[in-house]
Image (cartoon, rainbow, N blue to C red; front, top):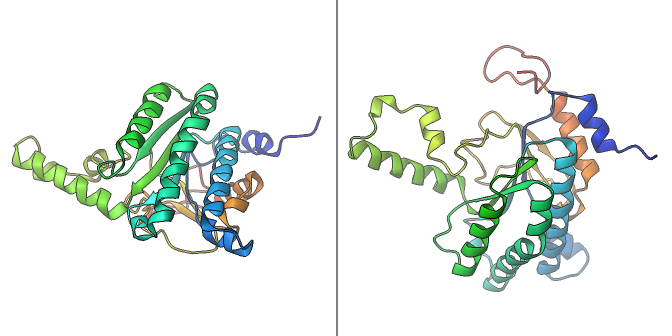
Length: 254
């Protein structure tokens, strides 16, 4: 029998794996340009990579996977490209929801839904409702998401609570703030991966990622394979996470 490298990694490093991996999926357009294809072809191939990586994350034993699918700044792109991206979200949910549910994946979409078309919001609601009780892998898709907008909205909600007398300003802690974010109830990411060789967070999980380990892959997102995910996780496992204190040993032992 051919050994499964992902399963071997999970078995070899019990307790050391990151609970929560977040990925900035970058490079679809450049992938298409290298092949003299329209940008939408890169986005379509990127959706195929999502399917493969979600499956690989589950096999590795990762509990939470957050994928940066569409930022609140992406509306500045050409209208045709934005329309294509919306269509791909529809396609992903309609085509893959049954398989995700069957495989025990819980789906949650974070980000601002106010400016999304009603049919997309309905699809998101359906996906979340159907998979709510699944526990094998918790998949968050950041769509129409921006970290600064998320924090601003959280501050506004906290201010309303203070004004209404339901929250004492002196009682506000980082944990309180976290409870007002889109990711409330989700542990902060242990590992953030960005593909395509770019080295910035691009407004992604900027509160939650305060102490995340960062790994930058030169692979364009459509070329990001389960083996490259495994390599990123192995790099994480070899690091020391101190959280501002002394050396706590290999990542995952903190």
